[in-house]
Length: 79
Image 1 (cartoon, one colour):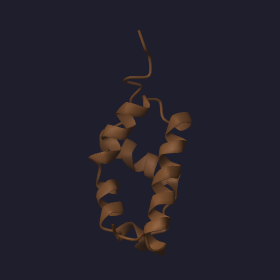
Image 2 (image 1 turned 30 degrees about the vertical axis):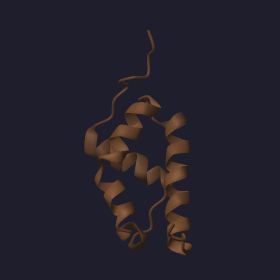
Image 3 (image 1 turned 120 degrees about the horizontal axis):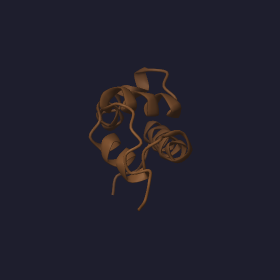
């Protein structure tokens, strides 16, 4: 198994904070946010570590996902 270096740990913490913040700050359900995030450009930036060249916060990730896919409340109401 690959050991996580300092940069990898920063990326893990950033992604974890984004998912945690998405619960309160996103209008869509966690499932919708997760799917959108995993297919987003910002997820690719986290994977290839290019996001480390930018000063980005967890709240910025939420905004970038909304900008890429559009804000929605889909999945927030359970019937």
